[in-house]
Image (cartoon, rainbow, N blue to C red; front, side, top):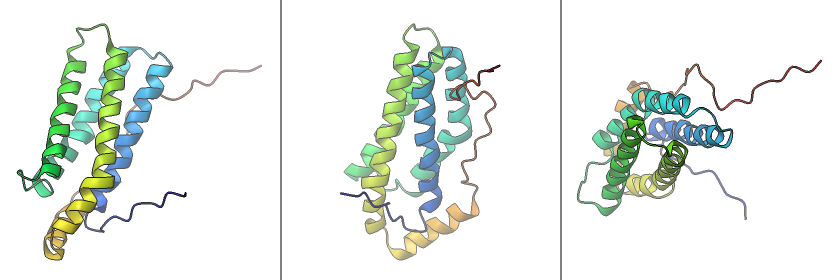
Length: 165
């Protein structure tokens, strides 16, 4: 059975596009752990990614999409955001010896959350919001920068090239 790409309402495409960057972030952390990259490098990247991508992404979702705080599906999205932030704060403390485990936990939390939003929450919200509401959301999102371009210098996830003579 072939998986078809999820058709996203054009008004939600900007935040949905950012989800690709979050899944790539998870892959980078997992790759770094597998390669036993120096934990401090991955902690710095995690902090950078939070400040430059994830924090504003969460704020946008919470301001524009997670309006009905009593809705059970929205509550799960908000709770996920809090869990992810708590895990990032725990990693940033740097006072623990299990950094790899924490980084893998963070990657899994973000991966699960992103897939929840894409597969369940966003399709649900597309049905819940009226066309007019979606249009207003789209106007705001398309006027903002949601390109999710990453310009982080330390590519710890990249395989080092070996010189062969």
